[in-house]
Image (tube, rainbow, N blue to C red; front, side, top):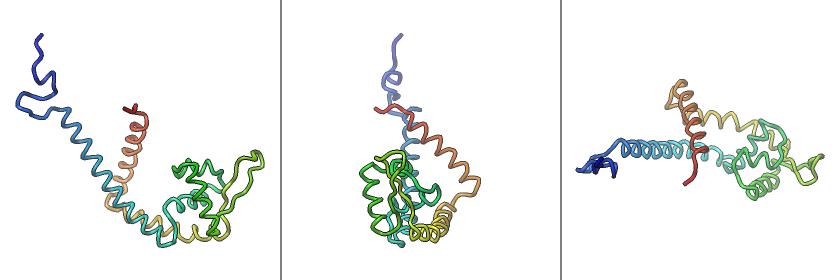
Length: 167
């Protein structure tokens, strides 16, 4: 059977877009819109955190310790998505600010816990509700139902992207 130009190249003879081109364009548009939306929300979140003299990653560590209690440095690393060297640096900064202290792990001499100091606990208790309100305002362009739907869709997108083979 003779193949047509459209069958072999995915384009019709006059260069008209195919379904494949439409899917790519849709994917690229989604990526741009998603990136811009994230950047807009991130600017508001970062500005809120910075007014307390913290970086986003430092705040993330304080928040994790506030909600989960003392954590091994490796656990914090996985929760805030930072490298092992990065977590050491960030915890060192929080220790120097008097917000976190390290404690030895009784069952593993190589492991160390990060624990909020009373000053760190007081800070995160004070600023977290304000921070949550900033995020709520930044996301208020969607209704509660839309936020729930977006959460489910983005979770599904993230899981599928994580499972996709790399090229």
